[in-house]
Image 1: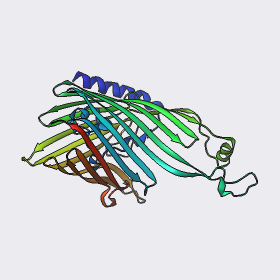
Image 2: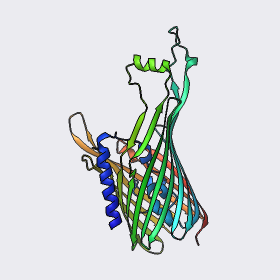
Image 3: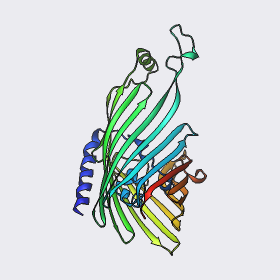
Image 4: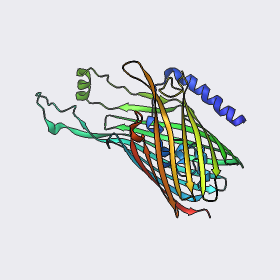
Length: 356
């Protein structure tokens, strides 16, 4: 209990201090989520994460992989395939009380036309002067987890972030996450503090004279080198599993994301703290077939008549696991029920040297 109080106290102190000079929505690609299992459950896996994706969700879950070595892969696309989102990870058991993992995340848009030199020195259009570039966000996560008591585990991440926009702009960043889990009688409580010390990105811009001229003529702001901070957020998870009979299991989880960067369009809005709850369930058959569903991303919508309505993002998914190979699928935003984008997500997991 003392550990939890210290973590929460540090989190609030840092967030209030950083609130005064930190922009909103920094490094948002790290908040999309990874793994089709999690996305099918509305990203409600903080307490129940027990595979290679735990390095992203809750590093203490790496202790429950039940395998010596596990590899995970995921691919999805957004905006009609314009943006590609990829994830790859490896989890390794060190001994009976510790484990580590390495994860890689990339969100990118490729083949973007650069038209800043479309018009030559004589004022003529020259389409041969069009070049192409990519805008990519990448992150490496190095995770470690340790069981300090039979029911209590601690973990954390060290994050290295690299963001790049062609040859014009790039940044390097660094951050730290902390995690704690307590389990008893199929009930698990988890607390994850992301960006606990405020993650930074140091941006560097390289603009030639022609690009500066274009920015000036179009009355766009010329970017300057600087430091971008990502404020801490605390994530709470509570999960419970029921063994219905020898064949069926049922798991439910309720999570809440507490952000500290001011008002967000979520269910519970505050300043500086906003709370985004989400719920997920999973029905398992013989530890081989899983059916999942979840809801989240609650947002308030005001129409032209100032009428206020609320939207939620529904999700469903299915998973099949056999002889150390798991295939998961998730479909989000069923029937365009919310303003979020609909997407199909697939992910794979491979267990090497599984525990008998």
